[in-house]
Image 1 (tube, rainbow, N blue to C red):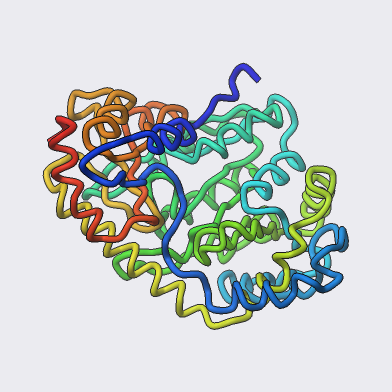
Image 2: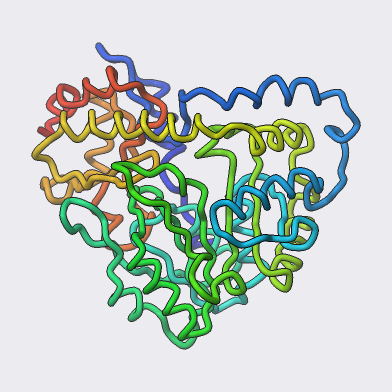
Length: 382
């Protein structure tokens, strides 16, 4: 466990609870959200709480109706029909899904290539299964993140088993475009690599960007494990519903990793999750529009600082090293002097991540985010 380190969110959150200031604390450290739940989530879940399926161990990999709803969602997004009975596993959130995928496919010493920055929880799950994380950096071009495709290719070596990528990526909000996805898929086919694709935020896109899915590339359905979740796009964090879809030969093993990890998905969440997946998803687009408005509030208020504009997702990054301040020190000063809870990205990748702090804008309305300039000035960061 010597290389399994914390990701800082818990420490910043504890500190935020103790702050006394002329400002209410801006909670930008954690992926909570104040955006409304889907309309079906609470009433359907509540109505089902006393039914036998809500209090059952079975089915171990999720009831078939929920798996069928997931398969329908994925058909619309990928063009590929997954068999609900054999190619979809329901998990206790997307992060369990990621661990199950790694347990099922990565042997000790196998290398897994991730982006830099990337979610520290994914990096440490690679380590938990005995894998070795390698990093391909994102570079800033035109004010946005672009995956360094030459560095990605260079990161793949003889021991590489898989690429583990998100789009939009957490914490940066980087979105892979069609050319980048094509290059990723070409590399997977050429080097016989597995793609573990975390699509938990895939519809939270800004500025009219097109939706691009790697499974639509030729030959990728049979070498891709798709992770999904209700926690981000659908804001149902507490329901803990995630999934993995992929070829039967891999998903069977993922299913057993899930069973021996948690036994069963969350029973009380299954009815509400199914109803939401089968419902009207206009609220997803409405949430993306509100998130874009919050992003723009931060970018406008902090214009001139080394922020990188996210193309989607729930958060953005500030390069404090470019400002002459260590990220951990910037985080301390922001909390102490500006009542802003923000997490340093130490351990969230490699050299690129280590320069940044993260501002999560999913839980704070635009009018409170508009106070950031004054708060950063108080912390000596403007």
